[in-house]
Amino acid sequence: MTTGVCIKATEAQASEDEPNYVVLLLVVSAIASALSIWFAPVAGLASISAETGVRVEHFGWLTSTVLLGFIFGATMSSRFSLLHRQDKRTIFAGFSIASGLINLAFVATDPAGLWAPILRFSTGVALAGVYPVGLAIAADFAGRQKALFSGALVGGLTAATAVPHAFNLAGGVDWRSIIVSTSTLAVLAALLIIVVPSREGRATELQLRPRISPWENPRVRLAIIGYCGHMWELYAFWAWIPFALTAAGTKDSVQVEPNHFAVAVTIAAILAGAVSSVVAGSLADKYGKALVAKRAVQLSAAAGLACGWSLHDWPTAAAALAVAWGASIIADSGQYSAIVSEETSAHERSRVLAIMTAIGYTIAAVGLHVASFVASKLGWSAGLMILCVGPLASAVAMKRLAVLEKVRQ
Image 1 (cartoon, helix red, strand yellow):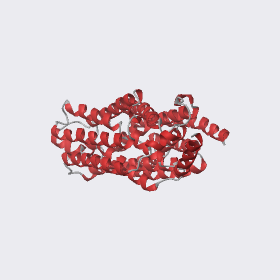
Image 2 (image 1 turned 90 degrees about the horizontal axis):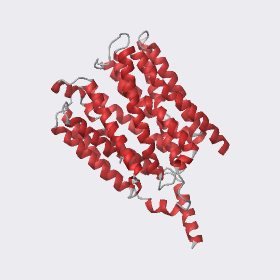
Image 3 (image 1 turned 120 degrees about the vertical axis):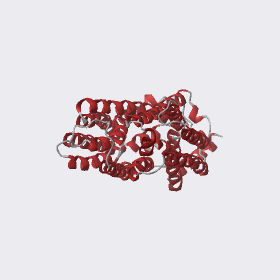
């Protein structure tokens, strides 16, 4: 009986060592489609502002409420182990459809009214059942190339982040059309994920060791610390860099609406990050995830400090540095989820990833508002430079993790 189980586990393990690129394409498409609703109101910024007259900072609060909802949902799911009680595909599809329906209800509300942040918070709660589960599904089929899979996944999501800025750059797009379109994509995401084959049974058969708390694993702890430093700067950069570039060469406040040049540079920075995520994932599988992540956060900190320092005196240089910052700021992201996926069983993976993302997005929400507060008091140079505290902390954690990887080899 024991021999049969061992043979079955050995065959399953051999199969799992080979990556499935078709599944990667499906999962990336599904997650990108589902998470398109995250920034849906921001994509309609111009249209909503023209119709309701709401101030620009209102959209920052709508984004923050999604973050808070995501944090709440991820915390509850990890606390009560909700994300591994059912088939991951079923969980993903159900929450994706739910987020689409909640997002659709936004059409019937006043974007400046009370229900708007409530709906955005609820959307975030639903997305907490999408993103960590999608990462876990991708890891199940990544084989030995978990960093490449994670990098490709992050790259696809990063590219999708540029869509709201593209809408705002184009102008003239009714915000209701954007809401309906993104809700449709969320339903499409559910259909895409159902096509992915299941590995739930296999994960259970292979879990022969007793369950160990992930917090007892120093590699997981260091990966989560690195992820937190990364998240401190990431969302604040995406949200505020167009405002900072618009204020370049001046002392304008955060209330100034981004100009076309600033939005175009932001799109370039985000797309550069999408490419670098895939490249970094490929390099990480060859040279080590901690080493690649360490180099990425070091470059991110250097680019961020240089961008902030040059913002008002050399705005053209600051724009070029913003693109370099955008390329490096996301390159480390996939390495953290890849490390956690390698160090946890398939049964626990969704729960641990939910914990990591809940902590990370909490840090992101704080960083988002700290940067804008510092900018309002000291200017955007200081507002950008304060973000570099995050990657510097990540660099320390990744240096330690790189040492542990060498010892393991």
